[in-house]
Figure 1 (cartoon, rainbow, N blue to C red):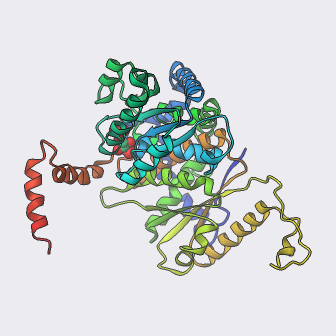
Figure 2 (tube, rainbow, N blue to C red):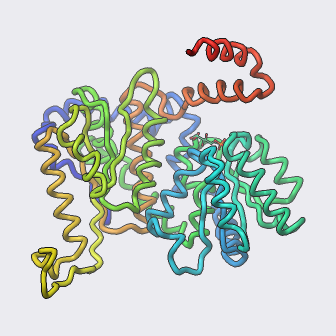
Figure 3 (cartoon, protein in one colour):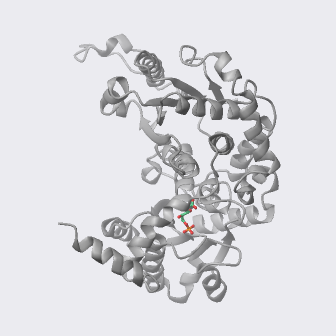
Length: 446
Ligand code: PA5
């Protein structure tokens, strides 16, 4: 198995006795997830997704991906939050951050609609010039401002370029019946896929939300689902000492109760940068409510050891780390040089991965010396299967951890606050009262 979870670096921070004291609590939270008896249980579709996924839809996704691969150079994926992060994380996890710049037979994949930057939109429009383009707009509501703006712009590009044939290049992933995109899809004949009702955005990467862009990038979605199933099988029972999801959930809550307020997901391969972003949404949106939760941060090593590494080593002692050690030996070795001008010959014959492993170990030891507990996950490959496994591991851990924290891990009431203000400031109909209140507040800001 490419995935190993270990608490072996934690011995001086958490005793088995302390962990054992959380056994019943962790088991209760686990049972609450599995019995569907907790808050937000309407959104547990991800739990059995690796078994129950819509097989016919996955076949259609694979066919659509093939069509997209055959007909376009650039695939523009429009979505934000849960409708964006998972697909990008998966593509970079398996194919690396330089996917778009590599020689390949699959289209480049660009993500827009995940910010409100005109220069980002212009850049991707420019990239599309002279290229064949398809788009996938992913939005459950169809009304989220960022992707809605981007969809207008890119749909317009396609209509100008292809006329009525543009419709064959637009792929929609949205609610089965509701939302602004469903009627458009039906009227204009866009091929469409479903955002399941019982799966929230941050748990949706293994549904059509993530699978179409992932398949277009040439990644085996069956393998990804098989990885998730392997994790679902493995973590479906046990106790805090045999089930790593329960153990991870318990350890997170243990540290929160013992003075830690920040969890850093640290990775030692930039291919996992977006996996960190996906993880931050998963845990941040699931647990950060009712004045509770760990702040989910991330760091990419060794890059960040030359920046925020200083803070992690010696700054305010508020954090613990969950480190994903990517240990994929590919034999890429450092060669000896006759003059040894850089003094690096002591590494001659050693692989780059070997150096990365020593850096990882040295960092774990330094950080634990600096009173930063380290939970560790080791990955010996970065396949589609591994990504599916990792996703399921974190999703289940998050649900258990959220129930241990005493919150609903499946809602996100706080994200509406900025939207109400933004809509009022933009003059959206229906927000007139709030617009007046905000205008008064703004006038008083000196
Ligand atoms: O996790 C979530 O629910 C959010 O991040 C949503 O996915 C995000 O706000 C996008 O919403 P929608 O898919 O309706 O455009």
